[in-house]
Image 1 (cartoon, rainbow, N blue to C red):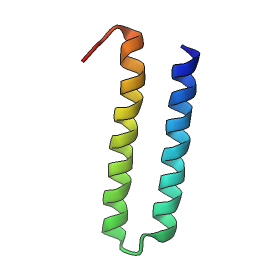
Image 2: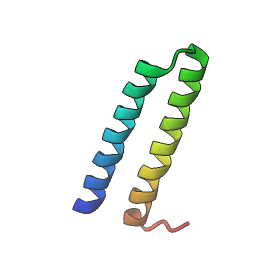
Image 3: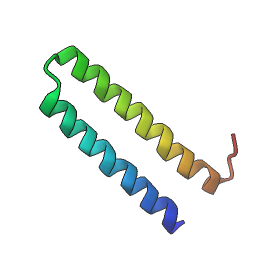
Length: 59
């Protein structure tokens, strides 16, 4: 349980760093929005991959 929590926190921190980098370096606003959406989807998938086995759901 503790390792899953640490993994989720690491994913959130990496996602926040990606958001900062996108805000800082993406010149086109539409591209920045698409990149942020991609980061959100990847982070959610990674978090679900960590949490679902704890709940007994195996895909």
